[in-house]
Amino acid sequence: MIMPRRKKPSPRQERILQFIREFIEENDLPPTVRDIQTACSISSTSVVDYNLRLLQKEGFIRRRPDVARGIELVGMARGHTSSLPRIPVLAYIAAGEPALALDAEGWSSGEPMETIEITPDMVAGRRDLYALRVRGTSMIDALVADGDIVLIEPARQANNGAMVVARLKEENETTLKYMYWEGDMVRLQPANEQMEPIYSHSGNVEVQGRVVGVIRLMR
Amino acid sequence: MIMPRRKKPSPRQERILQFIREFIEENDLPPTVRDIQTACSISSTSVVDYNLRLLQKEGFIRRRPDVARGIELVGMARGHTSSLPRIPVLAYIAAGEPALALDAEGWSSGEPMETIEITPDMVAGRRDLYALRVRGTSMIDALVADGDIVLIEPARQANNGAMVVARLKEENETTLKYMYWEGDMVRLQPANEQMEPIYSHSGNVEVQGRVVGVIRLMR
DNA sequence: CTCCGTCCAGAACACATGTTTTGAGGCGCG
DNA sequence: CGCGCCTCAAAACATGTGTTCTGGACGGAG
Image (tube, rainbow over all chains, first blue to last red; front, side, top):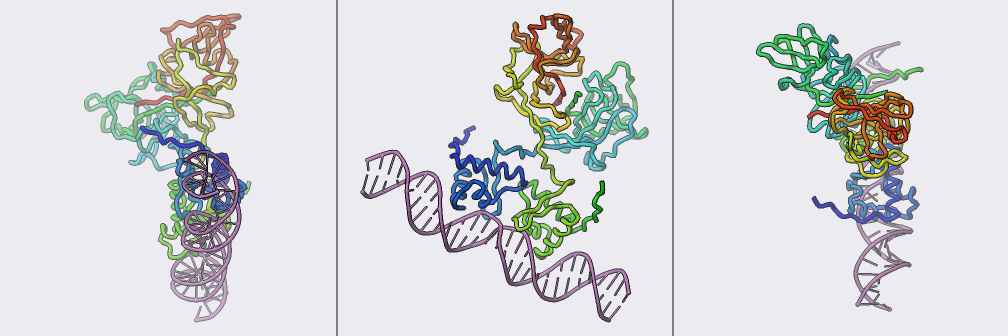
């Protein structure tokens, strides 16, 4: 991979970059050429334009021609405008809790209790992730504690032994367990020696999602 | 606290709002009146202006007069422009690893392996948080697994029994353990039945930080 | 029916803003 | 010195874009 070698911006260009950052931070929209002009005490708009061209050529910004305020900071030093994936924490989950209203999309009904932002590598190409907050210690041996947040990838099936969000249709319960297929039956296995597995007809068990991550918060 | 009672937007206004959201999400800057016009199949800019005025009066948006693209989504459903705290994942930690070069600030030397973004409530007012990736199973009983990421708050001391990042000066090792003060000695206790605690002079043990969170990623 | 308030269409208007042109210093180089 | 090159200044230009004016369609209240 060849990195484009780029010159360091001149002092004036540094100042322009800095101003653009601050302006966006403060106003939620990019500045105009003339905003930059007055803010940086530049005598003419042409000078601003000139320097913006250079900054663009060096790859610090992008400009959309003929578009008012069409300046966009590129890569690095843009304050923190990064839009990382944000996923909703929808509900509590534990054995015996009433089922969530998860539709085919995975979720969409109901307002999230909160949302969390995660790194792209946590998403890893997965789509429609959501999260649940764990209640109880049924998965303690899988290193999932009370109060942890589990990241869920919507799924209708799962491998044998996977940690899943499973819904028991008759009981209308949703719970977090290891799932094992045993012929016509399904065993939902807590990761806690003191708890017993649940056995049910496979027709009564509906997989809603796979656990793909865990987040714990201490106080 | 009196909430301003506001009418529900008309279908056309709903569509406009939705378009504004998408446009900002996609272009990092608000749309023009004419962008909205064409996108929403509206015959005239005046109609857009008219509806924008209403939306402003009802408090859904704010507009800056005479400013190109001076539309700002207010409160609720704006895409998700929040800038959340980002912290660096600095290194691996395990018993026996060479010490990290953590200065008084907590960190600042060395490039992070990666960075993660976390919710404000994970920070909870704490300053200079950083993260380490756990290697090994020494804390397995504390529900911290191999490969987990632990969030660290820099600290020079810690309560008895707290989970800390401790450095043994003589050995120049840094490790993740429960720490207990026992008179002149310090016991660094793994959370793993198969592992033995480390005893050391308190003068030889330097607390570098407290664990305030755990993040796990499954594949 | 008329009156009035709401919502819309079309066109024009006014100015905000990107872009270009022209030319002037400064600076290294032969 | 003359030449090319980078940087800047001032002004003009072209168009992007917010705003206003005029009027029509529609529906409910009197």
